[in-house]
Structure formats: C-alpha cells, structure tokens
Image 1 (cartoon, each protein chain N blue to C red):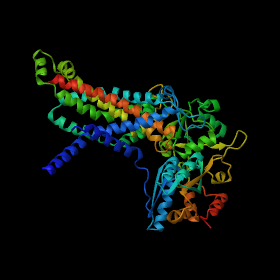
Image 2: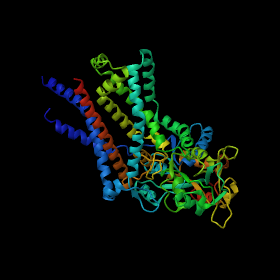
Image 3: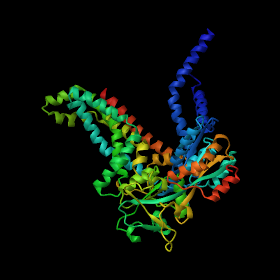
Image 4: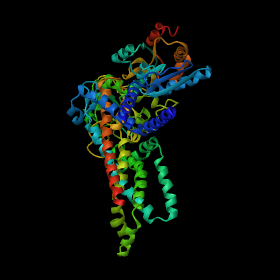
Length: 304
Length: 294
C-alpha cells in the first residue's frame, strides 16, 4: 500500500491524542456517594457508612482508602464526592482546585492522636518531640545516644501520599525524613513490622494500636510523649490527654467536599457529627470533635 | 466492480491496522513517556537526575530528583533474583526434559505453570509475613524487608518462565547430538553438561532474558516486601526502593504538570529503555538460536 506512511502517521496522532488527553473527567452519579482518601480514616468512615446505610437502605456509600493526597487529588479531578484527609489541604492544592472550578469545603468530624509505637521489649518509656525529630530525621542513629539500648534505630513511616506522613513531617520533624526510613504501604504494615523489629519505631493513628476493648494489641508498645524536655510525658491511650491537648501529637480529621455538602453527602456528614456518630468515633479508638470545631461546622450550616 | 474494489481495500486496511496496532501502541507509549519525561529536564539537570543520590520531590526543604539509588535497587533486586532463579530454573528444565520419567514430567509441568498464575500481591504478602521475619531471624537483622527478600520473591516469580522456555530449548536439541555423545562413551551427566546444555545455550539465554524482564517490571511484590527506603543501598540486607515501586507509590498523588509528575514519566522511560535492551538481547539470542538449529 503506497500511503502506508500516511496511515501510520494518522493513527499515531489519534493514539497520542487519546493518551495525553484521555480519562480526565468522570461523572459522579447522584444516587451513590464516593468517599476516598486517608487510610487513617478509612476504617472509621467505613463503619459509619455501614450504620448509615442500615438506617437509609436506599443510600449507597462506597468508602475507599489510598491516602489523603489520593483523596484530595480525586476531589480536584471530580472523581469523588467526599475526600477524607488527615491533614489540611495545602495552599497549592486549594489553588489547583479553584482553577478547575472545585470549591473545597472542610468539615472536621473527629480528632486523632498519633501514637509512637515500638517493639514490646523496647525499654524507654517516653520521648519528647525534639528527640523524636532527631530520630526520624536520622540525626540519632542508635538508641544509646538518648540513653536507650545499644541497638541501631530502624524507622518505619508511611509513603508520601499519606496525610500522616505529611502531618508528622511538618508538625514534629519540621524537616525531611531520614532517607533510611522504610516507607510502608499502610498503617497495618507498620504495626506488623514493629512486632518483629527490636530497634524499630513508627507512627500510626491511635485507632490502629488498640482493639475494640481499648487495650493495646499484643506485641507492640505505645510510647508516652512529652512536648519538650521540661514537660511531663503523657500517654495517648487516655482520651483526656488528647482532648485537653496535653498529648502533643493530635490532629483533626477532615472531610472535604466540593462546595458546602448537600443531599446525601450532607445527611451522611450530619450523621457522623450526631451523638450516635461521635459514639462510633470513640468506639473505633478516635476522639470526638471539640466545641471549636463544632462551632465551625455550625457556621457552615451543617449542624444546628 | 467498483464496490468490490472498495470492499477489498477496506478489508485490506482493517487487517493492516490490526497488524500494526502493536507497533503503534508501543510507539505511542514510548513517545508519551519521552515527551512527558523530557520536560523534567527544564528544571533538573541531566547529571542531577541520573547521578543524584537523593530522591525527595515533595521535600520539606529542597526537592531533589536523583534516581541513581532506584536504578541500583532495581538492578540489585533483579540480579539477586537471577542468581537464585537461573541455576534453579535451568536445573529443573534439564531434569524435566532429560531425567524425569513421563509421569513425573506430567505432574511437574502443570504445577510449575500454576506457579506462574499466583498473583503478585499474594507473593508480596508472603514476603511480609513469612519470608521477612525468617530472613531477619536467620541473619540476625532488625528487619527482613530488604533487597534479599525482594530477590527471593522475584526469583520465585520468574522461575516458571525460565523453566518452560529453557525446557523447550533443551528438548529441541537434536537427538543425533546426544546419540553421538553416548556413542563416544560419555555418561548421561557428561552428555547433559557438555553437549545438550551448550547446544541449547542461546535458548537458555532467551529464557533468562525473559525472566529478567519479568523481574525488572514487577511492582507489587517489591513494593510490599523491600521496605521502600529511598536511601542508596549498600548491601543486600538494606531496604531498597525500585523504580517501579517509586512510580506506583507517587503517581497516585502527584499534582499534574509539575516537575515531579514529569520526573515519574522520565523514570518510566528509563525503565522502558532497560527492558527494551533486555528484550533486544533476547531477540538477538533467539535469532541466533534459530540459525544454529537450521
């Protein structure tokens, strides 16, 4: 065929066009709602959605994880109705959303304490934030440098799409993680690895270290944390410490929607903030929202 | 007559398009990787990219885009896998085609093929809960999520390919060669080592290259079992983070049209070129293999 070359060019161009422009938009159907994002929140929101669907049999809510960054990216690309995020959206993300005509609105529906977990045989009781920063930045490479045993430090953290990864870095380290920190796929993997590793330390949402009865799961130890060398180290296992702010590493858990939530998404968020929803929050190992956040939610017109 | 002519042309065109679609898809993928990947270098220097030892695009302080540790990790894990899988695979292939009885062979072959069908997530999971703790205890390490773990798992995954392709190659060695060898008084072992395997050598090379390709591109298993620490690995007992794992971890959350986004495509292009070279070697070996046999 003499115009083979022309055909190849045409087909190639079409293919390239499809590859570079394709799959940008996906319609969200009205009947079911998609909730996507933070792995810290996924179990909690999953449980909430199950109870919500029991009450509203017509509702369909699909909850998936993937990390806060993944959820926020999906919200910006209009691929989810609600984005779970364990960190606030970054300035540049908000700008990108606005550029695409998405107006992110945040609701805080629970609080989370970040627990520092080690092997059960780890001899130190408590660390302060400065020591933690030194350890995770890689400045402290052996536990004996901070009066611990003579074992090399082995770090476990999340991957960069995790809100926990960003929160811990920006809030505790205020610098970059050690390049030697192992980047684990999910919180459960960090816990699994720490059960084996005598020199290991990792950070996980408090909901992942206690069982349904509120007891620490076997094989690991949860450290007490102090704000600085002069203050008292407290345990995140006592909800009062987190609520009062005495435990220094706590954070709000967000849900972002495009504009003030409406319809099913609004009903669902109202359910999460109701007394019943907040009871589930406590049951799953997280902490109920404080009055400041409830005020903010009222201002949005979400609750009365 | 005219209608017929048009129909003929149409049919011709249809088969032509189906015929070259693989070529077009391949070219399209490569161009997409190249076009997107090349935009990285508006902001990152070539030597910083290929020789930099730190990869931290979403850094708290200053982002860095060095992919050398990843290349080293990928090569290390693949090489380790081959060191384990090649002797094991070629040995198994030789056993199946030369030594095993018909019954053994009929049981063994389907089992090996089933091995190829195990999903990579399942193998990665085994790496976390079984192999990792085992390695840690065996070598007295704090953690078993390291290059050797990944290598062993990848060896398991590339074994079926290596076994079945080298078995074909060994079986294809003409009977005359072996009979001549026996006639000269060689034992079965001598015949296998000095006649059969050397004759099948280029076929075995093909099998190894296909195995390398499998190991190079595997993502989920290494992502789960090697710990993903981005630091430059110094030994097989260090945690590693391969190129595939980096792309898989970061592509989901990366903002579009940023240097980070393009850098991931550039990694993809480098990986593509690596596996292209491996396939090229396999192709050349196949061609030689065919010529030898004729």
